[in-house]
Image (cartoon, rainbow, N blue to C red; front, top):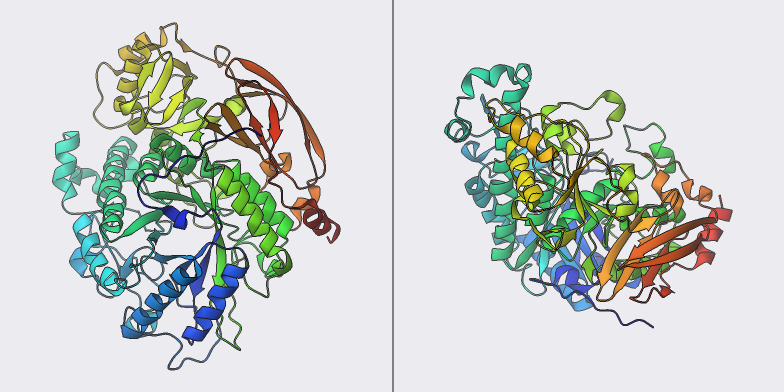
Length: 631
């Protein structure tokens, strides 16, 4: 056996130090009792889950008689008692217990005052927070101003007071779901002056027709991106840390540099299958750069389609195939995820059946209940291995954020539930020519910190062979850093001429770009650098460095073809496949003759002598193949 090290965790112990999957526990409808809480937590523990995430939503889709006792008053005495009891019982069972920071999303509530509410150029935003536990009493609520850390702090006060007892004991995460904020003309009055100071002109003459002035719109979006990062995401993480908690955040949906924001929170979280598995590479790249040991994913959400959006979705309700779930989980692992959060499990009062609004349904009545213990053990095992060592870096690919800011809405054929704008980066995908180079996304914040040492581009935890730039628009700040790195000897693969976005142009932009492109270390293709893997039709994979060894997880090749929505029983196409690859590792060239069994993935360990060990991570093949035969 090869001796392997484990990367020690910095800061708080995340997910109670376990790699067991968590499950989002939707508290939809009661009555809520201690007995039911204990019963369900014990079931969660018995099924191999490591913890729960409490989430509150008013289930308008359920047909039920309204009456006393179904839900305690939001943040009231009974609510606090139930939540603190749940946390203490979870602690007693060795389970983690996280909390959504509010009821529904984005953040908002009845106590948000107009001065602290989300705004547009004209004043108070028309968007309201609906389907919260407060709806039956207060109706739709104001949404907090995500561009003001002071407003966020005042929003947090009643929540933190109500959660005070529950935040004692083991450390919990306070969870922020995807933004889902109306960003059209999003604004804060303080930004008028900040915009003029920053960009040298007034935004006011353009505010009513921004779409007619895309360069001005770019400057506006750039300021919003920086403000929401500073005033919301970084401020939220600070609030969590100040209250014996850590932040777990789905940064997507925010009009900001997702890489920089994911690097700022304690646990960046992705989501799939409403987002393609490859989207998770953004959060995983940020974690690799910033040394975040855990990258989680809200997993299996609406795997067969979103009810009300995809006509076929509801016919598969509570009929999910665990082979399909495994294929998606492996696709996430191969894009850098190392902690699964199931979505999700409805609270089930004794003698009452509560349906979840979206697949996948977790509970004793799940269609995959008989396989749940073994499948969760598989998820735990792979997650554990993918937290070991240090992230491997191959080539840093510049995330085309400027291109996305200059564009506007997605064309109709690219839209999925909740997807509206290019800047959401849902369709960002490293170029296929870099498949073998283990590409990681980078952005301006990475470049600003980078230096060149021994021909490698080094920034925080990453050591990259080269940088890759393929965009139509490139901000002057980023060009400046790329010029500096080229002067220091960095290999930069530059695919096309780019233009400067924004209203005010730097006069030396074109000449700086021309001089840099003339350098011998700025090239047009990847022929001068060495891929980690070489071969035809590479599967998705993820690599980590373990002292003198390399760990490589390779998903079944069919995982790369997962569409949204996934066709029901897609895993039946995951038959036996072979791949002949060559791995280049520390001046070694190691041939790999890989056989993927039906529905299975591989985990390889390659030591400094080129010796290969196949680590036993696969969920027993009998369960998977039986699942295939059943279809």
